Length: 306
Image 1 (tube, rainbow, N blue to C red):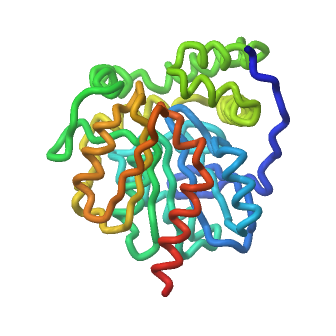
Image 2: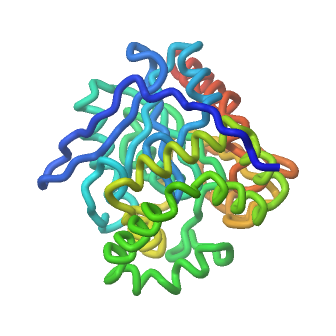
Image 3: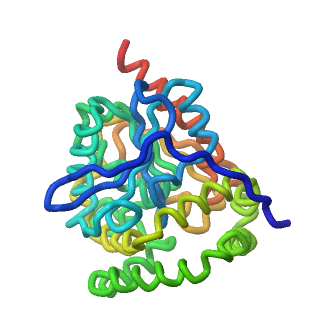
């Protein structure tokens, strides 16, 4: 059945922050402006509003300041290609400073996972805890593991290094053309996905969130997903064994994009990490347990403050 549509509340605050070099990073805030800050890093593709409604409600109820970010080349963020994944942490540090955030937790879905680990590595004095949901694993260097969709990513990365921005412009134009048909296209993607993701995308609140994020984020540009692939196919700029911050990892065992063994591989190399197995869930499974994810990292925060 086609998922019915519902309206998704707009963020309480949206804007962009200057991060140097004439660039800006877009952000969207949910929950309590006075609460503990949790940065939520979107998947590939995605943008600043790719945050489940349940997570937004939890943030409101538990007085959490939940902040989504646009990576460069999507939404309100200027186009830019990071030298490596670690370079993202410099932008996050400036955004946090500008928004008045001293300490934070970071959550990353899929392609947001590598950047979450980078932030934890670069700012152990500020990042209290990190959570990764079906995150991408390194494909080069001493921490590498092969397989999954990034096998194709490593093959096309050299092409995207040159043509990523033009391809992004083409994708943006295509999305503009199919915009009136975006809802049935989401349904079609659900039909082609594993059962668990199909059921999640059939839930009205998830479908509405994805549509709102996709259409809003791609309105002006769509280069970020291709820049992500280029960054993931390179050395990330840090070793997993040097990430000292507590990391909690959620992964579905039917994930068709990032195999669960990739998550187990990364967790096995992190000094302070725990793996949360999601039986029967696929790539988007972590989004369905967002309340548990937020409560888990906040408990780590509470323990750190004792």
